[in-house]
Image (tube, rainbow, N blue to C red):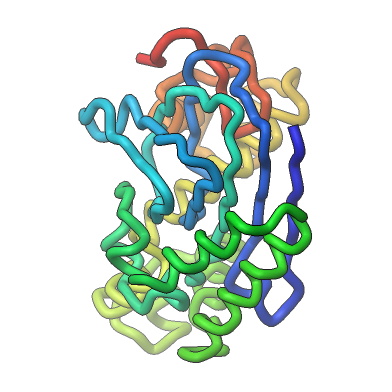
Length: 273
């Protein structure tokens, strides 16, 4: 398998977290259980295969092809494992999807949307151009050019996203404190936050805290759960376990027994229930 991960420099890096390109990829198991990572994505397939989502919001066998937008997910989803696949994943920084599309990001929350319905012929033409390229570097460069032209034709400022993240996840402010510091009413701040970030401030805080705990556990699997709960500001160990179940459908102990190619991907021969 060929894998390339590119982190765009600023100013594009303010809106795009990273681009992930791979080809000749075959999953290690029948299914891949994807844990929410807090980011929206634009996914472009560079082969003619259909990707099949087997479990999503009680729907079965959602077929995805060519290109689609995956909004911020707050529940795990399961794909049928890919075979000899070639794919480009554009992972957005907070506010990046809104900057690209101009569509309130909350409309994509827990959804998968055909990208051509949002970006029109431009994304179709981009995919056709990428299919003609062989070099991963040229594929990534062409994609960055497309993103820069689309995003900076509309905006060059993501001040709100940066400030909101600092208040909610670094300072861990309550909505009342955020309202006082920003001058916005709580209702207006929530509305603006959903428009830019895709989910509510409370769920964003929960997901960010879970991501920190998950990354820590992936890198240091012998960490006692009570220490993990304390380090990342869960109320107690039971709270940590409940949040883990919500976002992964697994307890932390069950997660540690799985085959994990990456922190957010579980390779499994059976559907996770």
